[in-house]
Structures are given as structure tokens and as C-alpha cells.
Length: 495
Image (cartoon, rainbow, N blue to C red):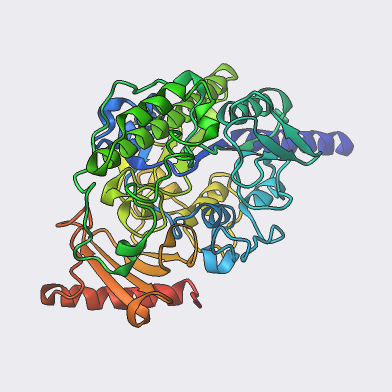
């Protein structure tokens, strides 16, 4: 009799465990590369009328849009290392995109903790961190930057080449295959779908090659910025559309490859015939760049739609949290630039949209300061898994529930390290809150080893007027310097 009771009790406890496991939400993390918030319709702005992201916009309408989401180092590999570890660059040690700094895969990462807490994990797409991935039940990733066409992928079993295919489509197909056919359907899952697009050199899928062909893309008001009040860094960068954007590899209008490619032949011939010069050439570069960039985004947006459709068809949509973001922001001609790296708003800020059925209020907007050091902690919190003390961010789960903790951060720390390097952006660190931003450029090729910039974002949201030396701003500058020092201590910055 006692044995029967014990058996019944064990069965009951097992059923409770199973129910608890079933209630744990699935997480789908869709991540793109260099996707600017300016080119997402849900964020509004001058490009909204082009309807660039209908599926991502739908996700925002059904979830929460974060308007103050930022990164701690606006460059690909460090940003992804931060995503995995919940730590700033100086602690996870991947400071830049060069081979000088190496990411140690043996260190603590959120997916390892998820896996030990009952989650199945998968990573498909771009990770930009050389070495064997850890903590994933399944992974298939691009080597380095990867290629748009005929991409190679690395797996646990070896390398695969997808001849004749487009990278965004391959990532989507592989993700759907794992989601629909290969995962353990008795376990909650975390699936990371990380796209290469819209990273430079902006090669669109053939089906979108002619999209926006007859459209004039609006220019930003500060497209011809002269950096009048800015320091050396803004004047000596190498990321301006006018002189740094390449007519061959970036714009496909010079070089043997594009002369013989039927997709670009008409474009190639017309450019040669027009013989553009001066401002007309710069404007042509902008139009060509923007159209290819937006065309690349169309494939990413299409991927979002396909994944959402699959979740619904499998009956997973009500218990799956879907998150969309990018590794950093990007310049869409603001200040005359492309690329990222600077602490100015367009590259410092990144899109973040979260759909959590039954919890997140549809169409809601959050304006709290969120940073990419928060992502790992958020994933663990969503899974009811332990968050290590040495992670440096905070879970945004309370924000998703509409609760703003009283102790939520009031300022953010930023640090960019890659100089000398691509685009010649000087090393800099800084602090920002909702109104003010203080930036310190330092090191070689900076006069006297240090230059400062200070912006009042309320009065100057486009960051055109550096008022660091203004007597009217002296008090705020001093306060922000103190805050910078405080954050350096808080985050154990030793650079």
C-alpha cells in the first residue's frame, strides 16, 4: 500500500514538473547586422513612407518598441560577444573586429546556462566570433562576415556550401528546418536567427534588385554636414559617402565583375554615360547605397514574416517570445556618413522590438535606457534561469511587463577601441542620459591626447553643435564627467 502511494506521489510530482516545463516560454531572437532604426517603419522618420519593413512593423504593433535601446561598443564582433556574455567589451575581451583580440568561447555565456536549465538552444547565421560555438544543441554559422551569394556555413560536422543560394534565404530555411523538424518538441527552446544583411557590401536578393528603382530616397537634413563645431574625430573619419564609399564594390558601377554581371550591366553602363561630378556624384552615391541597403532589408523582413507564420502553424505563437534587434545602428547619410562606430545617436542606438503574447501590451512603447549588456540577463530571466552576479546588465522583463523599477539606470557607458582601424574612427568613451551626451576622444592622432564633445540632445537631437566649451553648459559638463567616472568604476573599466 505504501509503495502504491509513493508511486502515485512520484507520478504526481513528475506531472507538476512537466506542466512547469511546458509553461516555460520559447524564445526566438531574430538579429540583423547594421540594421538602423531609421529604416524600420515602426520607428517613423523620413523613410517611413517607403514601407521598408511591413513584417517587423507588425511585430511592433503586436508587441513593444524600445525607443532608447543602445549598445556599449558599436561594432559587430564585440557587440555579439556582449550579447552572449552580458558583459562589456573590456571584460569579455573582444574589443574590436581585428585578430588582435580573441573571444574565449570557454567563458560563461547565457546559452550555456539556458541549456543546463532545460532549454534546447540553436544558433543559425552570423556570429562573427571565430572558433567552435558552445552551449548550443545545434549551430550552423557563417565564417567571419560570410557571403551574400553562394554562402559557406560552418557546423559541428563540418562545412557546407549553398551554391546558387542567397544568404538570408539559407539562414531562414535552416532556422525553419530546425524549428519544424529537428528540435525536441518536449523542451522549451531558444532559437537565434542571426542575419548577415544588411551589412556592407549590400548585395540584394535577385527578386528585390529593382525595388525602389524609380523612387527618390529622401536625404537627411545634415547630409552635407561640415562638422564645424566637432573635434578631430569627425573631421578625419573615413566613412563619408562622398570620398570613402567605393564605386566598384559598394556601388557596383566600376570593375570587371560588375561589367560582366547581367544584374548590374544597365546600372554600370548608365553610370559611365552620366559622368557625374561634384555634388551630383555624391547624391548618386547616396541613392545607390540606400536602395541596395533597403533591398537587403526586404529579405530580412520577409524572413521575419516566414518565422512568425511557422510559429503560428505549429501552435507555438502564444507561448513564444519573439525579439528583433540588430548588433548596432548605422548611418543612413546622416552627417554624410555610412557605417557605425561613433557614439553619435545613429550608431549608438539600435532597434529593439519584443512580442510576448499575454504579457506585453500590443503597440506599447518603452523609453527607458536599455543597453545590449541587458540581453543575456533578459533571456535568462524569461527562462526563469539563474543570472550570474558578474553579468553587468539588467533584465528588461520588468519593462516588458510595464513596470519601471525605481533603480533603473539613468545613464549609459560607451567605449569604442578599434583605432587604428577600418574607417579611422578615433578611440573614444562616453556617457549619455536621456538629455545629455559627453564624449571623450583619446589616444594617438588626437591633439594633446584628448578632445571632448558635449551635446544637449533635447535642443540638438542631430548632434550638430558641440557645446563642450560653452560657459552655459559648464555645470552639466562637470556633472556628466562625474557620472562618467562613476560608471567607469561601476563597470570596472581599466582602459
